[in-house]
Image (cartoon, rainbow, N blue to C red; front, side):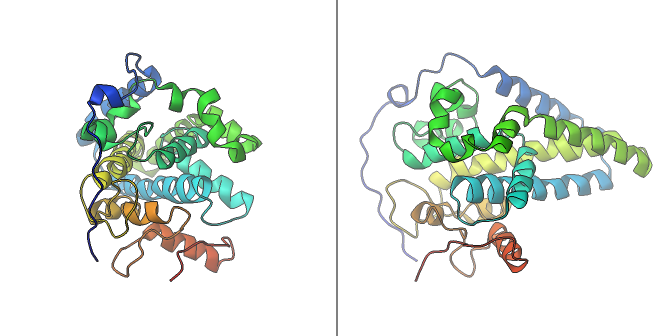
Length: 289
């Protein structure tokens, strides 16, 4: 597997590349602050059952993002019955990364302008900007529905996805209530289940998703020549259930399989194949020889 040389890029200042960023996206800023406040409680309410709940929901919500939001809704790398599609979308909303329509639109914009002007989160604008700071200001191109909805005509015509886009925060709120009640029944550990199953898990999943935006456009290796700086990075792939094989993905965006070598582990693809085994996924796209 060989590295490829990146073409030279014209140097421009961060101020020239970045959009105007004077207005904060207050729902994002306040929401992130609340999540961090909940994380602070984690050591004080730790229980092993809370940790297990958090780990299980990390995988469930993570697959909702990687399999549902990303590989199914964004790239249509496989087909599935609507009941399965909607279920995966609900799991994706548990990650509190936004509704499905906006999430898909932002990712399609990223592919259209990857590492160029217009990319919402390129490390060309700074590693921390790519990792999380891009999410803090209000940027009309990715926050104004009239701007971003033109990238998702396939989803805006679906009543379920439009409803979930509007009420996506209701899903994690209902989950938090259910976790508290079940935890109290389990043994008076409701607060522990909420803190570890919602706040800690959400913060970790945010950073894992953001690592795909930042680390896999900065470090790692390129197996394929692409017009951007996407790379494959094994440790991000492990954390993100296979999304860290990012250069493979940019080379073959419609592929349901991101780990293309035998040693490039891709749990999300395994899940898609499992759905296929139960005849719940079809037309699974993979690169040809």
